[in-house]
Image (tube, rainbow, N blue to C red; front, side):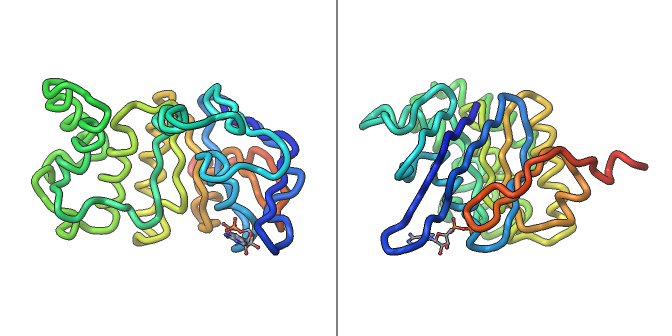
Amino acid sequence: MIEMKNIKVRYSGGIAALNDVNLRIDDGEFVFIVGNSGAGKSTLMKLMLREIIPNEGRVFVNGYNLSKLKGKKIAHFRRTIGVVFQDFRLIPDLTVYDNIAFVLRVTNRSKKYIRQRVPYLLSLVNLADRAKAYPHQLSGGEQQRVALARALANDPPLLIADEPTGNIDPELSYEIVDMLKTINDQGTTVVMVTHQHDLVKYFGGRIINLKRGQISFDELIGGSDEVE
Ligand code: ADP
């Protein structure tokens, strides 16, 4: 669960990037976060990941009170979240398989577990046949699917996707969101930031719109994918 109470974030010298934001996202939800450039979306993501702490207010994520987290506990907390970025952030000189295995090794998983888990994750994102490829040999959509498999490696209860479709062909964007929806159906909470209004209209669901640092809209809308 994510809970933000009376949040204010002010960068040095600027006006408030977020002002009086109150928000609650329950376990199992799928939420789109939208808003114009400069509205505060990245700031909201940074708060959720505890990359920054607010000037005022409190943030709770996955049972952690983020204002009070220190030292090693920050690393423990971050392991409860999978993150996908617009620019994929794969390691270029590792194969698809090793990009995913890498995060499992870092968290000290056994070799046996890794040998089972990586193929499972690759099949989840329909890339079972690309395990030996390197990132540059894949399309943008495929690279993002590897990044998604990597984000899910440690089975986090929460997945944060920051403009995950920003660097891939519009048609393939639907495929990525479809995958996120499937992952959500299996119980993972998904928060996705996007600029693509067509995606939001198509899939529907809970939409949170930020406008100049405040939530201007937070409602459930029906998607056109359900109409046919
Ligand atoms: P979005 O992700 O919706 O484009 P941001 O959260 O990046 O919005 O930015 C919100 C506001 O905070 C903008 O006015 C932006 O210029 C400002 N801002 C963001 N990061 C910084 C920073 N590091 N220093 C100063 N101002 C910042």
